[in-house]
Length: 422
Image (cartoon, rainbow, N blue to C red):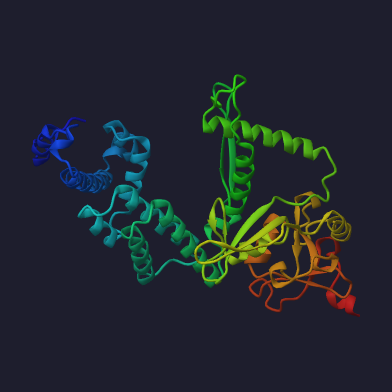
């Protein structure tokens, strides 16, 4: 597609091409004031260009130009010379033009770079996904203003995204819903073999699963010097791929041993001392209170209490919750996930009285739950009590059973709590 129209942009381009960069002679600008001033103008021009590229891309979408050509706007942008990352960012901004009026106003006068605009766009998407209900227009405007304020105060795109995660998790906690980051029904894992017999793997998982994966891959992604002492020649991506193979080999070796009583993955949970902001994980950011409770149920957990300046105030000792002998005893009693009957190898040990609420780590305060049922207990209103028979019983939420009658564990489904009491 060739544009033959002459526009004012052509004259601007001709003038920009004729501008020469600063000379190497320091006597021409000894204080650097002129160069500094010119650089600020170039950055302003760059920001304005980012905005106009996004608005033109949005107009191309409206006209259906890419669709008519059997392509996408992102591909057209790449063909025009934008790098793939910039094309992805521009297409994402174009999709949201018209929904963030305050951000667009600041972008239109050059105050925001495209990367920052994209960070706000992504941040608003994060908040919307983590909210159990659709945001009202007033709430949408409030959160847009909050992220925009972060952007104008100099926050980086990563900091803006982390702030959006914190807002989203606070909404989820206040409204008692399951944010997208914790919703296991959205989890997917797929792989396929390519024509050259390679395997491509794609996964979209919850924040907690992702945290475990990143932590385990990172631990094994250590550069190794070459035999002659020179630096590792592998790229970072190749090192991570080798780490995945190591992890798979270790998992295969572990599966061949008796792992019935082994603890779950180690997790570090950082908790602000003032209780104002949500707790967070080192790799994936802030978490809901429900997830913080769930993490404390099973695994090696290290709690780190920090002050407002992120200085550790207290370092909880790492402790293995439900050690091998207790896990084995609970398996003997429960046999399976007490809710759905999943085998014990698929389960975690759940604290009936939450560990964060001073629940004891003992036989009478633990039960087996698979990951999906564990999430339902923490998020969907299910409760667990210990019966007169020292077995766990499930109390469904009122929307499932208005009378909330206790149900026995899966391996004792023919029983009723009142039978035991009698």
